[in-house]
Amino acid sequence: MRTWSTTSCTLLLGVALALALSACATPGAGQADFVEPRGALPSLYGSEGASDSSREAPGEDASLESLLSFATEHHPRQRAEHARWKAQAAKTRATGQWMDPMVGYMFAPLPIETRLGPNRHTFTASQKIPWPGQTSAMQSVEKSRTDALARTFDASYIAVRLEIQELYWSLWSLSQEEKILAREIALLDSLEQSLQARVEVGTRPASELSRLGLERVQLSDALASLRAKREVQEAMLGQALGMSTPFELRFDDAIQPERQPPEVDFETMISNTPTPPHLEALASEIESRRAKQETVALKKRPSFEVGAQWALIGRGESMADNRGRDAVMLRFGVTLPIWTDALDARQDEAEASVLEAEARLELARQQWLAKLRESDTRARDAHRRVILIEDTLLEQASATFEMVRGDYEANRTEFSALLAAMKTIYSLEREAIRQRTVRQRYIDRTDALLGKPLSEQLEETR
Image (cartoon, rainbow, N blue to C red; front, side):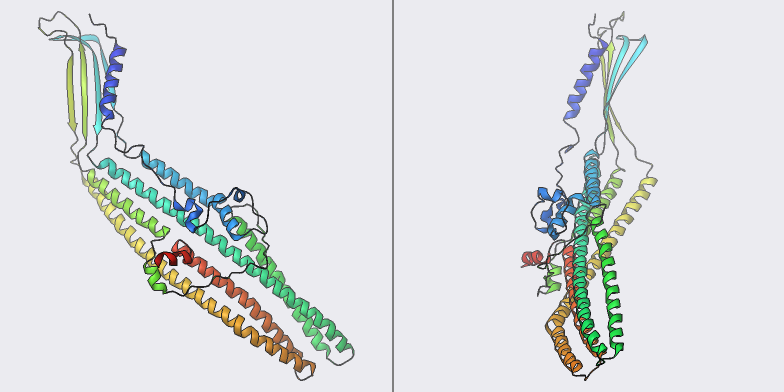
């Protein structure tokens, strides 16, 4: 009599099948080493890792770098992009795995009489095996998508930095203009006191005092408008930092946007520039679509199935010499992919998808080059204007004001000429502030388009 129980036989068959399949498991499964996106680390811009202090809300006198470090860790867009990348990386590891093997058991309540004896218990095991290369092709699709999301994360990191940089220098510009307007209003107040005495003794007409009052009201209105703009910019900066409240900034007098466009052959430099993250993301998307095209082609190949069947034969009354011997059968199957109309359509779709992605990459590259040239041109033009205003126009305006003031005190010119000369000086000072900000904005945009600071890019291309 047999002493094997049904449970023991099941376990034995399951262990044997597991050992047999372990040697042919999907290669590389669970062993992929995924690298964090470069943008996850501030080293993308050459700075050191964020310190513990960056986890605390920055103060009103915070530096630009501390604001950037804070936003890198707290901005919702960064967290969302990072989570998308992590999810896709996990999906890549889960893609292309073989189907689980199937283990079956059949029981015959009325034993099936065979020539070798009664058959009551039958065990089966099977495993479906895809065509060689199909698994790796499916993994390539998802791996390329993971790379695309990693580069998208890098581009998002750069975009967050650029947004904060532009808001920072915009707030600096508004604060400097406020100081200039405050000085101009203070000068008008002192002129009003002097002019009031001269009007009272009849040496100057009252219309000049009225004109001075009108000018002061206009300057006060301009100052109020600047303060309103500052509040708007502070609200936008708070949002850019990942905060739910506006963020106020106070600027030290030593803070100045001093960066200047470097003297370099810009066209040669950009021709040697590595591909920026947003273009790398599009290139990775093309690779993903090409891999998908390959998977569609491989689906026209057959897949396989291997299996085994073990029938337990009991000792009966059969006259056969081998009665009681178990029946073991091996099975091999192959699919016949003859219905390929749908696969042909999917392959056409995949080919068209690749062409569309390649065209989008070419368009994006052309736009990128155009924006690079625009940023460089505007930065150089703003730099030219800063030099012109600070080194030439302001000196000429100051000399003109001194001459007009002398003529006014000698009653050789009208009060309006004195006001106009004074307004010219302050207008030029405000314009110099604006052009400094414009210059810095376009230099920062050039950095963002290159994917790293322009100065660092120049060092690498030398």
